[in-house]
Each structure stands twice: as C-alpha cells, then as structure tokens.
Image 1 (cartoon, helix red, strand yellow):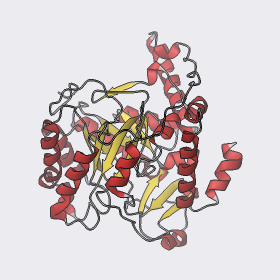
Image 2: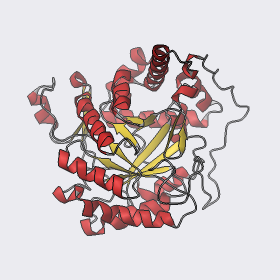
Image 3: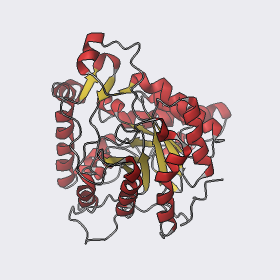
Length: 401
C-alpha cells in the first residue's frame, strides 16, 4: 500500500509539505484510542537479540530516528510506535528561528539523496518543552541542541548550556550539534579548545544533578583525518560520552547521477543519503579504532539499506540513525532492518555452533491496551523522561574505561 499509493502521493509534494503532512497524520494517530498500538503492530519488532545497552541505557533495538525529522518533539511516541529504538529530536535552539528561505530541501531520486539548507528551522526551546511535557513513556529520547544563528561565537556556550539545563529533565541523552552550518564557521570549530569551551559548562552542570544524562558530540563528514583525531582525543580525555557520526556533507557531489544543471539549479546545501554511506562508515571505523572501541558511537549518514546498517555496526557503531533512508524506504524500513539483524544473528550463531536467542520464536506483538494513555500534560515542572537504566551521577557511566 505504501509503495503503490502513499509514496507517489508524498513524492508529488515538496519535501517540506510532505514532511508536515506525515507529522500531522502521526499526531492524529496518537490521539485515536489504540492508534499507537496499531502502528507498533504493523511496524514494530521486539526481540531479545535486538536489544543493546549503551551508556547505561537499555535500547529495545539499535535503530533510531535522526535529528531533523521531528525538530520540536511533536510525535516522539508515535515514532516509537513505528518501531524506532530511540528518537532524537531537534536541532533545538534557545529562540525560534525560521531558517533559510524556501525552497530549501530537495530530493535527488536518481541518487537516493537529499540536499537541504534548512538552517535549523525550529520553534525554539519553549515550544519544545510544551511538547515534551506530554511525556514519552517507553521511548528513549535524545535532544539535539544547537546555538541560534545570530548568537555570536563567543556566546555560543551560553546557548548550549541554557538548552541543556532546560531540557535535562525530559531527555535521556543529549547530542551537541557543532556540525550544523550555523555553528560551524571556520577551522577553529574542531579545535580541542573550542570544543571544550562548549562542553565543559555542560559537564559542570551535570556534576550537580542526581540523574546522569550522556552527552554525545555530532560531527561533520567533511572533517580531515587530523580533525577526526582531535575529536577522538576530546572523547578519550574528557567526560564526553560518545560521538554521533555524521551529519550531511558539503564536499561530496562528485559522481552523482543527477545532472549538473539540476544540481546548479538546486544550489548550495548539505547532501545526505546514499552518496554519504562510504564516508560515514569510514569515519565511524576510524573513531572506533582510535578510541579502542571503548566509547559509544552512533552511526548516521547514508543508511539506505539493511546491509548499510550491518556495515555501520560492523565498523564499530553501537547504534545507528535513519533520516534520508527512512524517507526513501518508508515506514516499513525499521522493521526490515530489525529482521535483517535477527537473521544476521542467526547466521553467526549457526557458524559458531552456539545457541542464540535469535533462533527462538519471536514474541507475539503486544495486546491491544484497554485504554490509551492521556495526552494531557503533567503538572508544570514534572519530569517526563523515559526512565533510563540506573546510572551513577558521576562524570562517566560504568561502561567507560
């Protein structure tokens, strides 16, 4: 049904209009009694072999929704019902911002890619908090945070800290986005001194909290090897918990099937999708090797097929995130990846002659709930983050060396 009916309809619209329609439909499904249960029945997969424990949090599967799809946290529970093991919202900025003029997002169907220059359009911190107060029961939530475009570089740490403090009670982990265009202006962005100016205030605030929130750093695929090594040094020598690699690329437009005239008409922007796959996997492998495999990595960029996901996990990623691949493959993509992971675990178990939980019969889908959880927001100030596994209120979870 999706391939024959829904996909042609969505692809006949501009990508931003299609995006708004999808979010609206998901929110409507969330309001219908049993709506989220139905989504999970159709698209969710639960199996012990899919579970991962990363930075002290138990993930039901390693497949997450990348930041940029649900920028304001409008449909977290609905995306969880679609089978995602975790959902990362944002990028959130302290104040609302419109982003760049439209049109600013473009499909490249011949390359299974997208070009975007949105400019971190979002409704700002206050709107995101209003959405998150509705709760996200059972869904692991990441908050991707960034500075406002008009914030001077010297004031950027204050923007990140304000977001971190305000969203701390709602998020299960944070991603500090320095790879976006409004945060990455020059070569100084990836120096150790610059990174720690942003990160150290977050570490200091976290030390005073009773609950531990892991902090990840999202990086660009356009980094040099030297810059990747610097980021890895920050990871291994500071309380930073892990890396998200990568964002879209400005550098890789060679060898595309889209015509040069078509690309010139589109203009500037970050390229995501299939052309990014190889580079993203290479960066994850490099960070994994340099860090001794001791630190969490979320692989993102060019995850277009289940085989791409398997390659990313084999390169050292603990979790992966989808964006462009989800747009091109539709809502059944997460399920197909999970089934491929189960099949891969079965194959490896047969090769080693060991019994695997993947060989057991998969559990039945959950029974329909008698009542649907209320969407009414909790009282002001009431935390609503999904409970994470017990983690110490120190600067590093037990999994760090």
